[in-house]
Image (tube, rainbow, N blue to C red; front, side, top):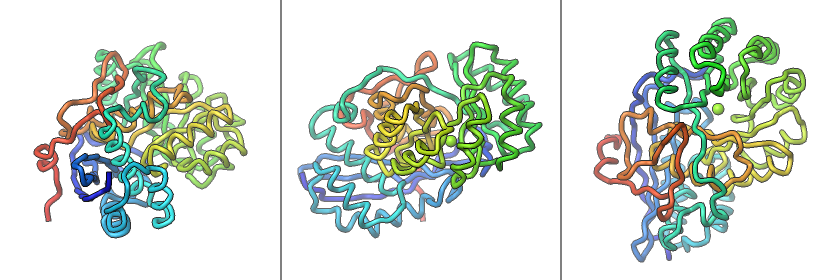
Length: 370
Ligand code: MG
């Protein structure tokens, strides 16, 4: 099962409504898709989703494509596709950082191996421990009334968990949003807040305390990613649990956070952890440290969503649900048979590999030209 071909495709898919976060307002998601083909004709696909350039982290779709094409693809051709761990270690040696680029390639290796063996990726990860995962919808709407309408529509459609994106405006504005959303959805719906690094220590403390009356499940990444000491300090001063996202890329990051304490939940993402192996490793550190996990997203297509779902059903510490809602926000997709959502959850996929198949004609519609 030697790798015979590596193809990299850049694609851009607009979102149905602008998605407003502390660091950017998103109008389209930029994707890098990777197709690996073996000498006996088995194909595997991987994806990295980037939020409008190097905004969420240092990587952009363009840097991911360049890293794969120039520094991974040339040596990957001719290698045994069955050795995912060996190839992961070699990628780590040849490419410092750039976890999104390495994740897209590793994801394609998992897909390819699952297809070659005729089993879903979650079987290769130890089997699934759940058959559906509660799904969070992100509220990131600039107009306050439109945001309330969206929350009400989603509740009517069965959603029971919302994450409110904050940190782009003054604390008073975000507190008002949280209060209005709580009033609109009632007491039985879960609310979480994600500041995406948008506050400093004093602001975070003030904001979280002001939001405490609205019964939040957790506050995600209140501080800049480097301020893990600040997160530990604030975590000890507020009643709401804290979750680390941008501060926790690797298992080493997870270890450092666990040692400092104060954080209760780690967000898993395949791309930031350089692949499925890295994301599962972060989950194991969380488990060992008595923390829970949540599966985040970067607004993936059905392809990336299927990959995140494999982790969400296989990693036992994922007790806080997940948010791969990308396909519900994007105006189009690249996959033939969709991931299924029902009753506010995303349902496990049991087809071979990642469980979905990229439709090359659909991909062509969104492929970047020139
Ligand atoms: Mg986040």
